[in-house]
Image (cartoon, rainbow over the protein chains, first blue to last red):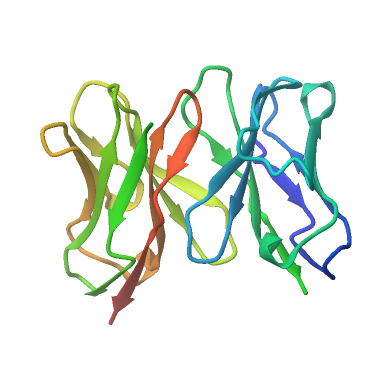
Length: 113
Length: 111
C-alpha cells in the first residue's frame, strides 16, 4: 500500500512570509497527525485530526499556525507569518481509527531565513 | 502526564558489538511503548512496539526491547551492530492515541 505522502520536501522562505505544507495519508486511515521536529529534538505533536474533526490542537501556535483536513482525507498545515524559530521538519503521520501504530511521511524541511 | 526520557543523545559502537539504547517512561496508566528509527532526511519508521502480553518484543532488523514495569524502562537492544544501523532512534509512549517522543539517540557504528 502507498505510504504517507508529503510535499514539498524542502522549503526556504524569509521570515514573515507564509508557507503551506500538504499531506495525503494512507488510504482508510481516519487519524492524521502533524508533528514539528526541531533539529536535535524529538517530534512534537502540533495537531491531531479524527476524520475531518480536530481531536487535539493544544500545542498548535494558533496565532500563526493553522491546519485543515478537507473531507477527512488530505490535510494542509499553514504558517503565517513565519518566524526564524519555525525552522524545523514538519512530519505528517496517519493511523487507523483507534489504532496505535502511526505511519510517517518523509517530512517537509522548512528553513526560515 | 506521560513522558519519555532517553539517556544518552549519542551512542557509538563498533560493528558487531552490542547495541543498547536506553529509554525510561513515566505513565499513570499501563503504557503502549514504541521505538522508531529515523534515517537522514527520512520520516520515522516503526521498529517495534509493546502493547500488552509478552514483555520481550522483537522488531525489524534484529532489534528487540524488553518492557520492565518495575524499572519503568523499555531499552532497545541488538546483539550485533551493522553499519546500516547508524541512524537516530526515538522512544515514544502512547498518550490516548497520540505519540509522545523522547529527544532521540543518535547511533554511530564504526567499522
